Image 1 (cartoon, rainbow, N blue to C red):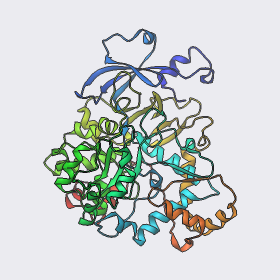
Image 2: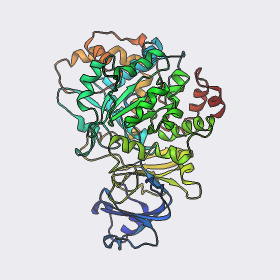
Image 3: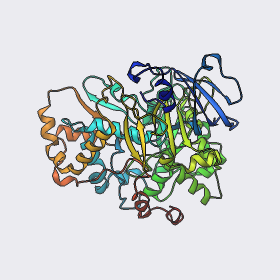
Length: 533
């Protein structure tokens, strides 16, 4: 477990080895605290006390600590403390796939999903990485994509699920970054997802009807993704025979790019929408009408979508959202953008009582950024991965600068981010990924992508060899799982000529010098965004 340097400095006076010491159950952190509560309270010089996983104290530094913390050393982070970033739209299983060169302007999701270049550069590579039976590629994908989120300050994400052939092993893929479909605490609502639109009201009634309005069962629906009448028409599948709409307070609409003003206004009865501006603009040249959404009182959260056509994490998506806002008359102040990645999605998910703000009694999922001089909300919107001082989940430091976290503590590993050393504490003893450090995952995926033709050639023979083995781990591809299963069964063929060697993109945007240049080369993005990037 990672220790703060100030903890190990004190501990060195008491013991010869960290291995002899139990992890601390209490932490006292000092810095500027951006609570993201309803009143946007900011404590310029604050102290945050954590006991176990929960926040026990949050107040100005001149206020007395609770008695149990009086003897604890204060760790001065010299930074700004935020709630951990909360994402409600992602497809992590695809996030080891390089950014796709989108070849055409699309009007609906079904068009690009059927494109030959999508099959060659996204669907086939993703299926090979996540369903290869005799390698560690699937485990490497999980490790890589969770760390990609973590290094961007994301402590809760969406879309990573596990399929096994035989024994249920979901626990193997739960852990580091929270996942809304697989909450660590069974008392928290667990999300249900659907990517395909409802084609008829009867289908909507059958699937969503039994849980409509049930706040213990949030329903994330990819809703009318696209820009044309065809995509827009799917919204009407929610219309009941009596003219009302099957929209409850537990419905979360992902994308909703095709909705007209009247339809968007109806979403004010839902939990809200999740906006992914970059992916929308790269694929469709347009994005969700968040102007009308805001005017209609629809809660808006941000999601980075996925690797092939999105930002690497929410820090990147915040910047695209701000550029869009600036181009539309400064639609959203920075503090509203900050809410889109903290308190708003937590509330939409039904986790607002435990996450999303920094308040006493809530779980200590935290993001710490270097410095306290900027406007606190602009600091978050403008931050890059290099500005991160530390990320805590359940009160436990999971990532942080080597100047803040001690790289000598047992079980941690180091990674270079933005020219500085980051300490990662991502290995839990007994967890199925315990033997998969991030460095190993990066090497594994780099090799696999460079040798995709070889993977394709041996893919079916290996599955045939293991036809009687029930315990094969595969990562569920939420958009292409049926296709991957057909490849495994030999119902579809894949060979060397169906893929090309690829290179693994750097895990952070800051270290990816080509990322914004490739965005600028996209044929669909509007001129205002191309000029601003």
